Image (cartoon, rainbow, N blue to C red; front, side, top):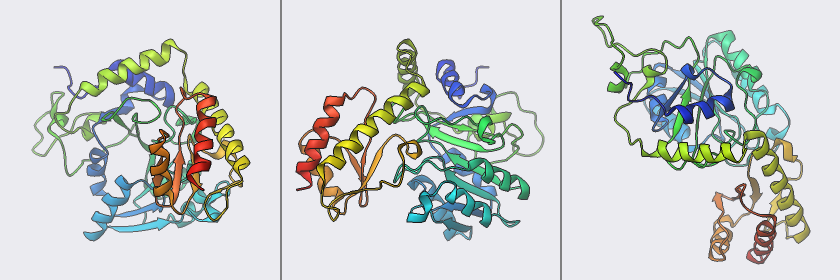
Length: 332
């Protein structure tokens, strides 16, 4: 019987090229809920205070049920020092730690988190699981799992932004020896000719995290996009180079505006090579500025007082220059 959760081979192969992993270690899921279900087994978690809302909300809810959660600072001024976040997490990991959840790139300010390999080593020493949210790395920031010492890590991500897949195509990479038995489990995990052992059985490998019926239409779009990327030779190293050049152009243009620091500031201590694929600006009235820009045809987003500029690879230099000029008008 054909496994209904098997990812389209083209889509899976492209992700494997990015992560340089065996296809058998990757699974597609509709949302991070599938991984959260597996996390029900864990009891003492460490995470940074810069994680995306999916993890933040889920762990906050589990915390209400008695799960112990330790949050490490990731957004303060000291956090931008190379390896600072990883070092703080490593120092906090002890025999009570069941899992560490951390991003490869922080969604709020674009900081690339260095030292994930050291975090992985600390987790292995105490038998803890490591989950890395690589959403803001996939297809735009180099993230070789084996080269970073993350062979035993869980990795999650999605194609909504930098792969341009649209909604609904997310993935979970599991360690090769994973034997977890998710408490909340989907019936798709029963595909594969499971034997009756008197207890709830699970599929092999990634199937143990399988959910249930999903909408496969998104995968057709993802396949078409990947074929286009391949035909145009748009691989991750090239897209990273394009992104870095775009961010440099934005930085130079914004600095030339000489905007009042009380209205907008750019962290000049964070070099481009340690940034993800967007530029984070500190703007106390970020929501208002974003709304003004949208009315002028410039689409940005904001997280609290942070205005995020994330140019796609097809945006031209002239368009970036125009956007910078409109930013200057929007902050007057």
